[in-house]
Image (cartoon, rainbow, N blue to C red):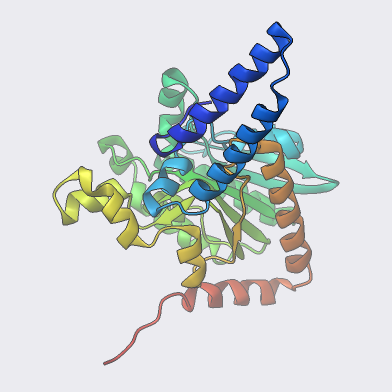
Length: 317
C-alpha cells in the first residue's frame, strides 16, 4: 500500500503488527496479547488521523494512486458494460470513458474521467485531463440516453481540462460551455459523483446534474490548490494554504449548498476498502434514481435549472 506522508505512523504500526504475526507463526510463540494491543493502538491512531484531516491532506488522498477510478467502479458494481467511443467529429478521447450498463436490472448510461495506473496508461488517458472531443463524446452519450429514456450516472475525477494548444485549437472552452448549456435541458435524470479530483471547468463540463455527491476525501474546486497558490502567492509551495482558503472539501461544499450529499469513505480512503465504497455508491445511486423517477420531465428540468440558479448568495452591505 502506497502511503502519504501523514500516514507514515500508521504504516509503521501496520508493518510492526505484520512482523509480529509472522514471528508468531514461524516461532510458534504466543504473542496474541501484544498483537491485540498494537491493533487497538492502530485503530485509535487511524481514527485520530483520518477524522482530523486538513483540506490539503484530503486533496492528497483524492490523488492517491491506488484510489478507484471510473472503470474500477463500473467493473465492481455495474454489469453488462458496453463502452461507446468517439465524438463523431474528431476522435476518441480516452480521458473520458463511458457507455451502457446495468444496475440491478436498470439500464443506465454511465461515463466519467479515467486516469491511468502507470506512466504508459497515464499518457494514453492524458492523466484524466479531457480534450474537446472528450466533452463532445460525453454530450453524445447524454443525448443518446435522453433519446432512449435512460438515467445518466457520471463519475468526476480530473485535475482539469487539458490546456494544450491542440485542445484550444479544437475548441476546448466552447465544448465545455456547450455541455453546460445542453446538460441543463437533457430530459433524463442525471447523478454526478466526484470520486477523486474535481478540478475547474474540466469537472464542471460534465457536472450539471440533478444530484451531486462528493466522496468524503474528494474535492471540487474552481482551480487546483497548486494553481491558486501560483496565482496568489507566486509559489506552488503554498498549495496547502490555498487548499484551506479555497473551501474545496466535501463538507465545505455541502455547507455552501453546492452539493447534495457527502459520501462517507472507509477509514483511510476509498482505496483501502473499495468494495465497501462500492456498496455506498450503489445505494446512493439507487436512492436518487428512485427520487428522480417520480418527477415528470418538465418538473425534473425546472428543478435542475433552479438548483444551479440558487447557488451563490450576494450580500449587500
